[in-house]
Amino acid sequence: MDKELPEGIGKLGWTVGLATFLDGVVEGKQLFKVEPGNCCDHALEQASVLLDSARRASFIGVMDDEPVLVWASHFLSEMAKAVIDDAHMGMQEKTEPV
Image 1 (cartoon, helix red, strand yellow):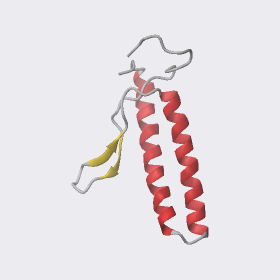
Image 2 (cartoon, one colour):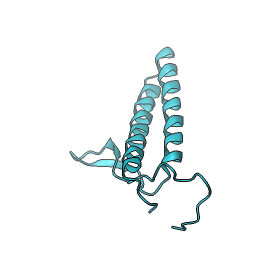
Image 3 (cartoon, one colour):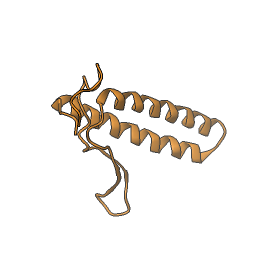
């Protein structure tokens, strides 16, 4: 990756690509994984957007009796957790971009 990055990009570190989400049909297998080498700053911003979407879907789903929105909230929350967990690992390691 080009070492000449814009100011402030990656100051918290880079995702490591270890966090997974959404169980697969085979025990112990996950369907999705966070990609390594993403800026933790940006990853955390995106996790915030995912959590806000989950909050809204959950509220509307409960208030309007729409179970599909409650399930969407569950999956968005799981995705956001994986992004936050992976960014946290990257911030602890202070890894270089992949």
